Every structure is written in C-alpha cells, then in structure tokens.
Length: 586
Image (cartoon, helix red, strand yellow):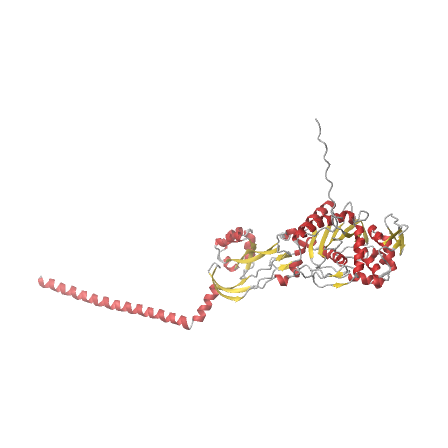
C-alpha cells in the first residue's frame, strides 16, 4: 500500500516536471514568435520609411491634401469723397463630388432642403454629373445659410468662400456702375470698362482636409492672391441723389418713356452726376435686362432741337460777319427752304438781333444765319464741339452720334441742322459741348474718374474766348423773363442756358405727338462752374423743353449750389413776407 502511494507520487512529480518543461518550451516559442513579429513590423516600418516613402506620401496627399483656390477680393468703387458705390461682400457656395454623394443617396433630400432645391431635381442634377469631381450645388449663400449645410456633415459636400457684388445706392447709380456676373466679373458700365483694374488675380494654397472637406492645416502658399484695386469716380453722390430724385419725380409726373441728366464740372471735365430713368437695381438680377440697364445718357441718340442753336451762332460769330447785335429780318415769320416750310410757330418777330433770335428761339432767324455761312466753315466750328465723336469717358457702348460730312449738305439740311435736326447727340455729348462754351472756349476731356485735387486735366482752346463769352451772355437772355427758359432761373444766380424741343424720329419719318424735351444750362453765368443737361423722351401733355426740363435743372442746381457752396453772383431777392392780418373780433 505504501509502495503504491509512493509510486503515485513519483508519477505525479514526473508529470509535473514534464508539464513544466513543455510550458517553458511553449513560452520560449511564443516569445520567439512575438520577437519575430516585432522584427517584421520594424522591418516593414523601415521599408515603408525608405523605399516606399514617396509612394505613401503621394497616397496620403491624394486623400487628404488639396490645392484650393484663394478668391481675389474685387476692388471697391467709391464716389469722389470715398462713399461706397460698389463693394464685394463675402458669401459661401456649396459644391460637391457627385460620386461621394451618390454613395449615400439618403443624404440628398436633407441637402436639398438646406439649399432650397427640390430633392428629385437635385438628385437628377447630381446623377447626371457623376463623372465630375467638382459640382456647384448652390452659389453665393449667406454665411448663416451655408453653416446649416456645413453642420449636416454630409460626406462629399464642401463650402467654398466667394464674393458677391453689392451696390449700396441701388437704382441711384445702376446705369452708371453697371453690374457683375455671378463670378464677380464686370458685365456692364463702370464694372466692365474698368474690369482689368477692379478684378484681382486669384491665388492658390495647398491644405490638408479631413474626410468632410474641412481645412485642417495650411501647408504652403502656391500662388499669392492679388486683390483688385479700388476705383475712385468723379461722381459726387450728393448731387447724384438730388438728380435721381428730381428726374424720377418729374418723369412720373410728365409720363415720359425715358429721361437722362448729366452734370459736369466745367473746370475739370469731371462727371459729377449721371442719372437715367427708368431705373434698375443691380442688386436684383431679375431686373438685369438690356432694355433696363443700358445707360441712356451715353447710348441713346436724340436730335437736340434748339439746344443746337448756340453752336451755329458760334460759327456765325467766329466768321466775323456777325455780332450779338447784328440784325436779321425774320418777317413774315416763316420761309421756304428746299420746298420745306420753316416757321416760328405763328410768330412774326420781325427784324431782331442775334440775342433775341436765341432768346426767342427763332427758327427763321437761325436758318438765315446758317445758310449765309460757308458749309466748311460751319462744319469746322461744329466739329470742335465734339459732334459726331464719342467723348473720352471710356464707357462701353457709348454712341458717337450722327453728324453728316459737310460735302453732303444741302440748303434744306443746313436749315434743319441750325434748328437741331439732321444731327443726333447723346446727353453726355451735349453736356460736353456746353462745357466748352462755359469754360470760355476751352475743351477738356470728359472723365468719370476723380482727378487729383488741383489738377484740371489736359485742355486746349477750340473757340475764341470773346466768342464764348458773347454766347454765354446771349444764353442768359434765354433764361430771362422774356426767354423760353425762364423756368430755369434761380434766385441769386445768373443762369445761362438753352431750351430744345425736337420731334422724335421713327421709321419713315417723325412720330406724331412725340417729342424730346431738352434743357442745357450753365451756372453761375458770371463764371460757370457746373453744366447740366436734362432730357425727357416723349413726355405726355406739355412737351416743351422750357416747361418740362428747365424746372428740373433749376431744382437740381438749387441744391447743388448749396451743397458745393458756390456763392451767389447777383443779389438775392428776399421772399415776400406774409402780411399780418389784424385779429378778428368776436
């Protein structure tokens, strides 16, 4: 019994030793395997860090590194005193990789809701562009709306920063400034003509993005962005607002189909105000149609009517054959030229001097004067006033006007031209011509850009100073109580100007009952600082320039003289004080 017990113990002990040996072997084997595995990992890591490093970097960059465009900020447009007229504000656009979106089509409905699109339409749009890697889904969202999209965290949907053009004055400067397209490139007006100045050059940078497209780190600058340059216009927004208010009010009252107003600085040639009606708001893309956004003051032609007469008289005075006091017999109030009747609208002014011819706007007197001059001499004087040529404004689409070569003139054409027919101008051209008279015969280039203080730009004399001064004095008679432009008169200021009323041409002749009503004037006449042209197209009811356009000139100039602080050049007549009635006794 004892022997059996002893044998059992010996057997158990041997088994224990055997198990112990096997455990040691297994432990050493496991350790060896672990060491071998670790060695393999170290070798693999060394291999990847050496022989495969470039491959792995390329693969990582392909997944998380991107070269993104840095949008250039477009230059601002301001008036001469720095008031913003056009600025670019930051907005966000939503873009996507269609292939990433199509992997999870359940995200499309909530994305469509966030960007205000129909789910079926968005799904169709994405699927039809599945071969692309970049697709805009919504452009120019306000940052809060873009954040809603970003917070959805949809894979493959990204936010890109862009800029949208904003016009603080809206309709007030719409025709002048124009507008940009959705990519912030100039399409019309100043935005187009100065595109190379305003537009910057986009840059680019290499970044690391997470799987949602968010930029985690900026790695390097690939190309430096160059912002657009700011543009300072010659426009005075104070005058621009006044002109807009008066022109729109008058147009609504007289029922015109269109209207323009241009105000120039006589000493510099700068355009201080330029307004057209009907207007459009460049912030509202639904209003961007050619019929609404064209700048009528530079593109629309009209026959100037009697506002042409001072320039014909300039030729007469320059010839040496006439003086302001020269007498012309206009009896019996009409004449026949080339089979056509020229009349003074049932008036027989008799024998009158040149000043009266201008003040009364005698068609007969003007025809006789023009026909007495040599066509070449008349044409040479009219040419220096810029008729038939675009101004130096640089505005896109500016019309050159119509001014036939003198070799084609016939007596009936000369007579018509003396009364403002057979020649066509823009409102800016007419204002420029009057500014030459106002400056004493000096021609300065028209500019829409502000000149440096103290500079007047290039200039040259095109008309004798004495002739110009004589015409200014004669034009003052037009605004006198006996003249056709008396409604342009201002208290405390001498005003010189000319009214014009011309029938509107249409295919086959002239339209019945449609006229252009024009007034061109300068103030103060003692030393003109401002020249303004007001034109209405087809006013209903009253249609004469002295009745329709002259009052607008007076209203705008009244405010402009006060704002610019131009002192009166004649005594101010005080308004009549109301009489105080004796109190009533009860």
